[in-house]
Length: 459
Ligand code: NAD
Image 1 (cartoon, protein in one colour):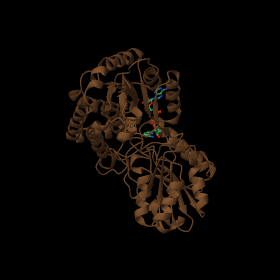
Image 2 (cartoon, protein in one colour):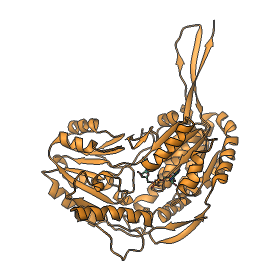
Image 3 (cartoon, protein in one colour):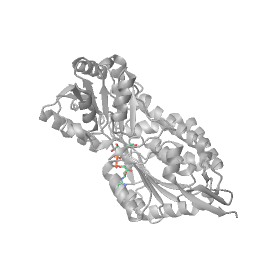
Image 4 (cartoon, protein in one colour):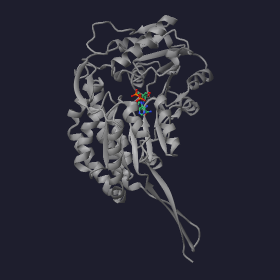
């Protein structure tokens, strides 16, 4: 068994199985046995079941939110409730559009009928991380199942409880075998899943490093693979947007209320030099108003990092940057009085774009702020990264903002907005941030089905 910790309190709150290769094998076999019948069900019937799952998830929203807050450290008021609601919404969205699994016909003349059908692939292997565990698991389940596949889902070892709760609801509606969930460690459980010969598709969300492992496993058997990986996303503030609303957007874009543990965090802030000092001062003051505390406390705006391991990693980045000469405009290293892995939201000024803190994904509440003067230069800086997941542009001049959005190398650019993904939008990274775009029905069709052409001679 593996112990699951509440990181806000450093208390064990549950145990889950540490599944090994034999368990994974049983899961894949069960999903394979369920596949033919599930694939044959009319798509709208599958969709109806997913919609009902969404409704039931909405019913237990508060229970799910408390579980998410307990195991992830994400504050209940600002994060966990939203995640539970989004999980229900994802099931309802994919349930509703499941019937859109359409093919095409080709106008080849009277004597020839050529058409395509979209077929499911088989047993999908899905692996998710801990940072938004239930929402990301809901996506894998809803996309794989609505398109007629069956799924073996591996939850993250640090946050499996919410995923298991969601799966319990799914099992009340789904035929036996269609959804399997395994829990355990990365290489031991996830590795066994990636390399299982019964898998027909890999969908992975997590770090770029493990994404490469997933892609190598897929290459061995020429499997389709979709990857949602890391980021180091830029947020660009133009001189006409030094207002408080933009300060709040920058806080939201950095996902400070999730301790910065988000793949889309706008963690490189570029503020025009003419407003830089004033803007970062007001940003720091606004961050100092936020309450960092226990994830289950309604008063907390910000909870705790996921684990001691992440805490050591994130503090290492801050310590190194401070030693290199960075200035903590707010935040910095934590004191010893904290009950869990709470870190103050931190803004670092005086950084060099070449430092590790400016280039690598910290995955913590650490924002680097740099002044810019020339538009071409800031776009070059924004694109000077191996990642290409998200970006944020803040300007009242919409032409200028859109020009910048078009030039930024990222899968998702938000203009004067800083919220999360919405079901139905195409979402996926460029460069080392991933492969494929999911979240929408079009993405699900591209990722989870294969076109088959059927050509009939009518002469
Ligand atoms: P991680 O890659 O370490 O782990 C993710 C999952 O992979 C976990 O379930 C883990 O057990 C499993 N895993 C680890 N090693 C494995 C191996 N050798 N074989 C098979 N499975 C293995 O990532 P993490 O630290 O849990 O999550 C944070 C990362 O996820 C960040 O880089 C973040 O940007 C990324 N992320 C991306 C998105 C996106 O949509 N692009 C969303 C959320 C998180």
